[in-house]
Amino acid sequence: MTEDPIWQPLQAELARWIHANRSAKFWLRDDDAVEPTPALDQLLQLANDFKAPVTLAVIPAHTGEPLAERLGGETQISVAVHGWSHENHAAKDKKKQELGSDRPGDLVLGQLKQGCALLAKLHPARFVPVLVPPWNRIDAALVSSLGECGFRVLSVFGPASKSAAGLPAINTHVDLMDWHGTKGCRDHAELVNALVTELKKRIDGNDEPIGILTHHLVHDESAWIFLKKLFQVVAKTPGGRWLSINDLMKSQKL
Image 1: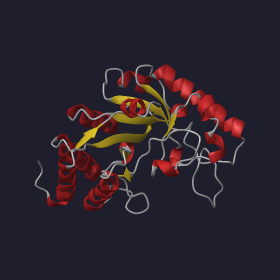
Image 2: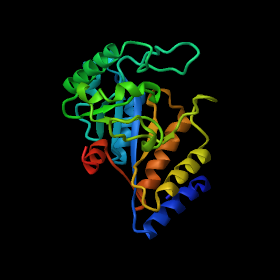
Image 3: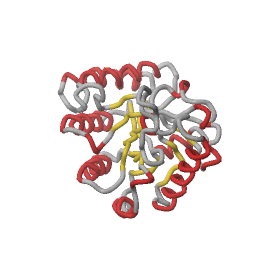
Image 4: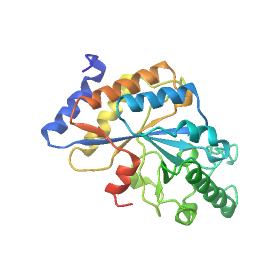
């Protein structure tokens, strides 16, 4: 196992889980996939090396057969729906949002239904009926109709209890990227601390899986290094394990 002191807090916390006879559930969601790229190849290689399932949130309007062909032989990948076109329709003074109230609800839902059907057709073996809203935002008024569009799960960022009501949530909690600062990977010690914080919230019985959020298209070298080390640490301890989105849906009977 790595001797890097930065990772010792995570190793210690996972050891505590072992002593409690528990195993932490991790899952990984990677957003903004569209087409085959060297960055996607790097992500897929890591997933295969460590047998770590990855949920790719794919943008329906900008994808097609090339991505489907690239993923054809992959066994660790699931494909979720990342909005429709990942376009911002919010007013300039509001946070970016594609699935907001700035457009007619029927139009937004129609696009989501189309996106769901398209990705199910392109990726029949690895498609999951999970909606990942761009920027992790969706108007609450739309959520009750998502089931009619073919979705069974909503995945945003933050505790599941804070998700919009109306659809079960499998969320992400730790984002590797420093979107408001360097635009690169966050400080590794800060990320380890965030993971430990999430684990401590769950040690006494909270069974919510810890979601790691990545964006392969904008990863710098630091992000790739962190992700590989995270896979290494989890792989070498029974205190944690990676689960696929399908595993999580089955465990929650979704």
